[in-house]
Length: 160
Image (cartoon, rainbow, N blue to C red):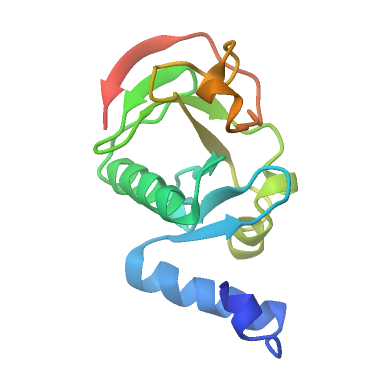
């Protein structure tokens, strides 16, 4: 269950304060958005360090937390997530970095925390056969992974 579901009496400001506490203690928080269409998750707090927030879609809450935390740690160590670059995440899939066109539409809590200048990068993941969501037979049709921006020209691969 989610914190908001477990605290029905809480206000949006109460939840934002909870996110701020997590960001203060861990450097970032992961916000998961459940949806009938496609769930997604994003970081809150990387903007405080001058970095774009990170987003992933089409995965479970646990997988989203692992992928985003791995990538957030790498970004805070100085590793660059550049649009168009393929990056092999530690203990995770190969991802392509895509600039999110409208963070204001998808990252409400990150904007509530960091203000209107928040940028975001989507970590678009390849399926277990190395197929991307724009390829035929991605995940054998079992999973949807919307891409929330325009793909940049491909750059060379790096490991994170």
